[in-house]
Length: 374
Ligand code: GLU
Image (tube, rainbow, N blue to C red):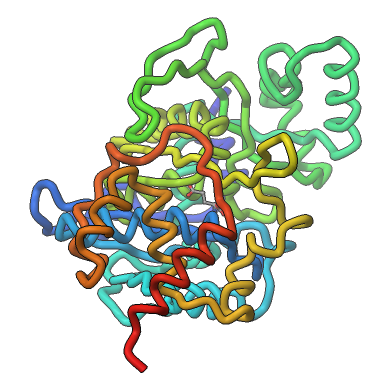
C-alpha cells in the first residue's frame, strides 16, 4: 500500500508541517506546578449541574495553582448545536462565579485560539493525514445500514459491539479496492487502525479514583467524519495537547472512553494531560440511588436555580461541600471568608457518587441568607 498516495487522495492539498503547530502553540510560560484546566462543553443549550460541578473543581485547581482555566467549545456534532448556547454557558457559569481566563468569547489571551473545534478543522486534518501516511489510519466505506447490521450480528452472537478486529472490514481493503471506491464517489470516514489488544490490561493513575485497571482499546474508532470534521475523541486529544492542558477533571461517564484517549495520545506522540474522573451526582429516589436525570429532575438544569431564585453562593457552597470532604468543617470555622481561601485539593474529591439533596441545599441557603445584612 502506498500510504502517501492514499493520504494525498483522501486529504488533498498542502497542510502545514506538524512541527508548525508545536511552534504556534508553544508550551505555556507558567510556573512548574501551575495547572492548565478547561471546561469543554458541547453547545447543546443544556448546561447542567454536572457541568458546574466539574467547572468549580477545574477553576479552583487552576487558580489556586497560579494556572489557567479556559473554555473550549466542542461543537463537532453540528446536529446538536443550538443557537445562543455559548452565551448560555458563559452566563450560567458567571452567575456561579466560575471565572475563565481564556477561551470562547472570553476576553483573554488568544495564543491558543481558536476555541471552537469547528474552526480548528485544518489542524485535525493535518494530523489525520499524517496518521494515514504512517499507516495508522484508514478510510472506511461502510454504510449506516452495514454498521447497524454488524451491530445486530454482534449482539446476537453476544460479542462486544463495534468496529474492531475481524469485524473491521475496511481495515484490510487493498489499494485497488480503496481507489475503486473513491472513484465511484463513495463517502468515507477515517478510522484509527487500533494496535491495541483487549487481552492486555494496565494500571492507570486517575487523579481522583487512584489506581484503576484499564483494558487496551481495540476499537477502530472514527477519527474523521465524512464531512471532514473530526469526532470528539480525536479533536479533544489534539486540543488538550496544543492548548497545553495539564489536568482534565471531567465526569466519570468518560471513563469508558479513556482507553481510546490513551491510544490516541500515544499514536499522536503527545504527552497526556493527567485525568481525574469525577463522581456523578446522585439522587435518593425511594429506596434506590440513581444519577440525576435530565428527563425526571428539573434541578439538574442550572437554569432551575436562577428561576427559583437560589442565592448563587449557596449553590456554590453546596457544590464545594460535595467536592471536598473537608470543606464543610473549614466553612463552619470560616463562614465569613471568601470561598477562594479554602485550600481545594484533588485528593479530597470523592471516588464514588455524591448524593445531591435539595433539602440540604435549602438548609445551606437558609444559613447563607441569614448572614446577609438587610
Ligand atoms: N465535550 C465533552 C462534554 O460535552 C467534554 C468531555 C471532556 O471533558 O473531555 O462533556
